[in-house]
Image (tube, rainbow, N blue to C red):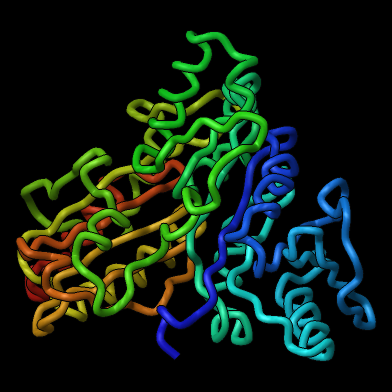
Length: 364
């Protein structure tokens, strides 16, 4: 099955009190969400008027007044969704058009993205459509500064929803926007009042699909929003030397003494990249620094291949490469976007330089 045929999944994240329940209550009433499956951690206030659709041994699926279906995460995400799916099939195969997964306020969303990529059952039915993060305007700055989870939620997101803006003055709101732009410069920022937003604004932020125009791929990568870094001329370092500047407090700009050093940058390569260089570089990069690679996006011009590839990784896990039309990379330049936890750009570029150098010239 092609990626385009899989069911889209939106991951909804945000720290405690950011307004996820209010947003969900508004979303599930919209016609676009009628055939959606909403996977949440507990029903809370989201259920409102509903009837039981199906019930399994450990699981139940309820239909809300809008027609939207809802189930809870009970331990393992894959098991919970499978139980809901099987319960629906026993009830007559109610069609589902999309899925929304709400994380807990203290959750790092990366494991959910990895599960969607690696779990066999999920990966053959669903694809990531985007990550939406809610940020409370009144408390967002202090939350970002104090909590690692909040920083990671914002850094991984494709779209940032600023809630409760009416409770923050203009100065505080401007500072929050600036901080969010530092953490995640490419994410669209949208103001949301009382959870009211058109569902269509939150969807279709996914990995490009084969046959789509290059403009979609360019918008997905949004490389121009990031700080551009380049290779420094000189002798290629050893792998150990390349990974040495993992953390560089003198030049890093941590959010606070409690937080992480979230770094976002774009690395470009003008010449086509040999497949073995690309594979060896990414393999070692993930081996050395994978847990600190919050998200990687790339459109790559691979030597010997007519079509560029779209790459998407979350920490140690990569989505299978997607072939794009030539219009996705018209200038032939490969572009890699990195959102990291404290990884200096030099740790990435120098390691690439090591593998790019002719093998005879590599230091042992």
